[in-house]
Length: 251
Image (cartoon, rainbow, N blue to C red):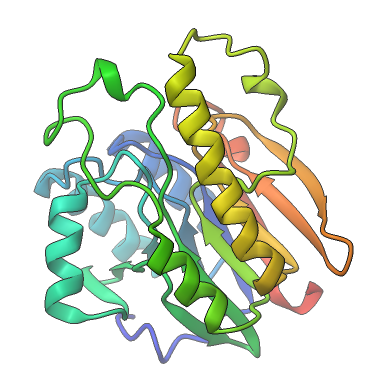
């Protein structure tokens, strides 16, 4: 199956950061298929520098299972290449292999009457320790223009993000256990606040994210809305913490 618009799944898998780890990715794809998912939505930090051997390995597993995968960008994805792809194709599903599609920021679609919004991106708090253009890329964060467009286009039922909006407590990062520079922590928090401003207008019922390498489900109570936020663990975690299942009929 290669037609994204023709797909109308009833059960979805959502997957957290894979960091171009093809061995874990293949396990996660098999797990999603075993759980009866008909498609996978990935929350970013997917392909890192987009090496062909990673996509080849993933495509092999996708072909075996018959699944389709769409992914939003994380902070550790090759934003120079992604920017070129969006310039060429526009804000729509961008096929990278049969059954594998990049979902640009602010892209929207509907499956089984459920409205989806893709809004990847996050700030790299370890940026000072990484090489620009090889280990992190400009464009990793949501821009003001992207946030405005996501807001202007109205409500959605499900958001696929990489970052987590402000207002959601993330215990695994409290106290800055890894000793990241305070300036980077502050920048990351401003990004979370920008995402929260989008959520306050879009008011999704569910939001799926990654980035923090922990598994957590939390409620975001915005007063006039309530969003269930699922943070997915990364490729170092058991596959059941890296991947979760959603039946669209339950929304």
